Each structure stands twice: as structure tokens, then as C-alpha cells.
Image (cartoon, rainbow, N blue to C red):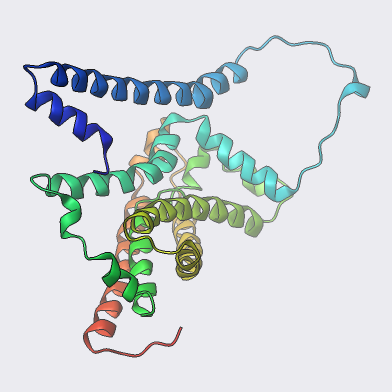
Length: 288
């Protein structure tokens, strides 16, 4: 059983008239309380302290000679700025970062609920069968399809210019080339997408005991495609950004660039899937 909550909940329902059911109910409640506490403390670290430090903090006198200058590269400073803008805005955080972790969970839960009447793992292929296909180059295409598909739900690149809002003009006047600024945004978006793909790949690694080094090798073409797609998505937003908004949700939830990017990325995933089908159907040899 992948989700530990199911056991205690089902035991509590089936044994409601004895002590085993009461104990299972208490266990189920403890699981949920632990999850709530984790979410609370994470939210406190991410939002509450950030908001309070940005507000009216008490100022203190500092001598000029006591100020220590910290040297940072332009790339790291722009990357940090990209993260801080998202972290300080709950709407951005929820729709861009949290979605990376939620989408794999949603798909796994949908799979489990769809086969909730029995053991969901019973419909999975045998481990020996899966390991036997590892030498087949079509695995690279299948992983590419899955990776590109989950990348389509990311709004990090397709709304990166729109998220700047009324401060977008600053990008034109700072002494940093436009290409470098765009490259940082692409790197940040690609990093989130790669984390999402890694979370998805953990599932077959655990279920079928796939070697980690093999999974990392298969991930290489996915990383290359992810960077290319994020460059295309940011160019899409750069062509017609939605920078005039009064609420942050408009930049991500009501931005057509994100919708167009999603369908475009899904179409590319479908194209790779079609190629994988023809390769498998007609036994086309691919040398990797």
C-alpha cells in the first residue's frame, strides 16, 4: 500500500465496534494532525517570517565601516531575486512551486482511487518484464513523453515576464543583458520542471527497483528538451506579456500565455508519444 492513511482509515471503518477500530481511528487522526503540523511549520518558515521581515522592522544605526560587502555573481543574484519574488507571493508560490509537488501526487492518487476496489499494484507489469526492457532505446522516448507531459503543467517560464508586473521596466535599465536575464528565468523554470520529473521517476525506481544510474542516464535527453521548451515558453510570454494587473493571480491564472504554453507542450509530448508508438509498432532500430 503506497498511502499509509488508507490502512488505518479502512480498519477504523471495518472494526468500529471494538478496540482495534478505535486504535485505527486514533492512528488516522494522528497521521492527519502530523500532516497539518508539517504544513503549518513550512508555511510559517516560507511566508510569515518573510512578511514580517519585509514590514516595519526596527531600524538600528550601523557604521559604514561595519558593513561587510558580500560578493555574488550576477547569475546567483538574479536567481535569488526570482525565488524571492515567488516566495513572497502566495499565489505565485502555489501555482508555480507547489504544483510541481502536487501533480505527481494527484496522478498517483487518481491511479490508486481508480483501482481502489483491489490492489492497484496487481495491474502493474512484473518487475522482471520491466527490467528486461531497460536495454530497449524506446525507454528513452517513453521517459521523454512522461517528462514533457508533466512539464506542460508548469507556469514558471510562460508567466515569468508577466509576473514582473509594473516593475518590468527595471529589466530594461539594469546593467545586465536581456539574454542573461532570460537565461536565469529559464534556468529557474527548468530546475522546477526537473524536480517534478525526478519526483515522477522515483515511483518506478521504487516499484521496479530500477538502478539509479540508469534513471539518471535516461533523464539526460529530458533535461535538454526541458530547457528548449522553457526557452520557447518564455519567448511566448515575452512576445505579449500581461504586466498590467492589480492582483497577482491575474499574472498566472488569467494569462493566456500559460494556457497556450500548456497545450503546445502537450502537443509536443503527444508527438513524442506518436514516435514511440511507431518505433514499437514497426520495431524500428534506434541506436542510443
